[in-house]
Image (cartoon, rainbow, N blue to C red; front, side, top):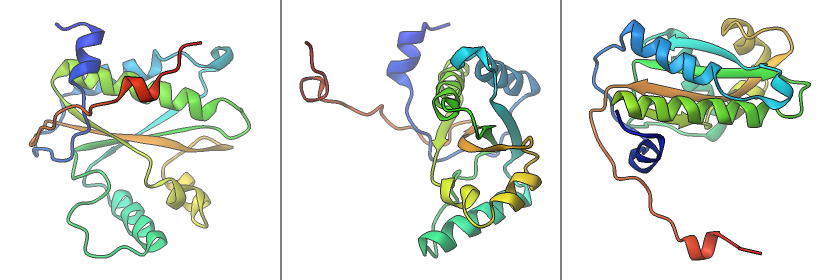
Length: 176
């Protein structure tokens, strides 16, 4: 097993997956990683909705995203045909829900890297899930009452690989 720093260094967004399904153990490990994430005031307000990649709701979300962005003829859907997508929703009245959801997603992405799986953190469906069809999608996705979409993540076995991104520490860090 690698350590956390190795997983951070190796992880990159996966935009191509095989058709191989995740095992029950892999899925439970990823969900456990998300559930273990710290939350502000230990509220544990994040809800995880697991959807298989061929579920019709994902096609509806794709269509709504594309309609709102005036997009047509895309080569891939928003989750790049991954076999599993997990949408995180949270208490809409809690100030720190978006931060808590982001922490949970990063835990899950690093766990996926450790398992040898690919992951893609997804924000592009935000407007579709927070727009005029918010109530419809919230109900269809079984979000708890008064919860709203925060972020999503796709998982699967990598069909493509990509080098992790580079950065310019001198430009991005200030020491006081």
